[in-house]
Image (tube, rainbow, N blue to C red; front, side, top):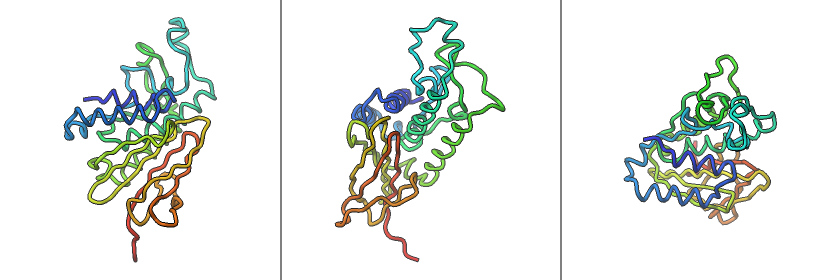
Length: 239
């Protein structure tokens, strides 16, 4: 089953139209009404030829109701809007790859296609003109999932809202805990303090270790606007 509720929540959050609390409540509701095997088998999608194209949504294009049919047909994002859309796409794609369910990706997101709803979402793939930023985003998001595949596929899932801007969740399996954090704000940076689930922690996305409190019970993560973190908690590795 295609997980359209998660798609809508992830995109609304990335666009700043849903708070982190809204997303956490939706996911908790899904976990309550779906048996675990079903929840973990949902197909997590973002882009679809049955919906408005993701970049058009993330780039704050005008509402389709305000445009004529001809304007909808020809509308393309400006350079600034496109940059915003690509930055938001990373947030949504990271959530897609790390939340419960099976990521469903065609080309991702479809390597730069734009378009309003039917029939303008059904254009042809831009062969030879792909948006390399989109392709890089998906390569990197997939690499995060592949770095700890068992945890992201089967791990216990606990969502939370650090504040209105920052959505987070933990995935835990066989004593291994990973925490994903995403800041959807365009204006505000946040420093988030989270518990330590093991003796050591590394940020897979930022490539550095968060600052651990002196008592070793918590660590602090700084998130720039549209910033993300994937914290891997583990015990000290000895050679």
